[in-house]
Image (cartoon, rainbow, N blue to C red):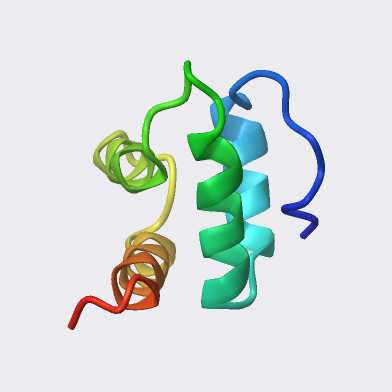
Length: 77
């Protein structure tokens, strides 16, 4: 996953899901979160993952891993 790729607009849900599935470490998830935060139209990644989970577009396991990585990656315990 290349979180350093320049983004000019928020990705589609499918593109975001593919990118999230490609993240293999908390660092990659946090880099993606930072890139998305630079886009004024994009909602926060944490909220986006929660929405995808509620809409059943991602598995509970993937969402749990991502949300945990975002939570612990910020130094919040």
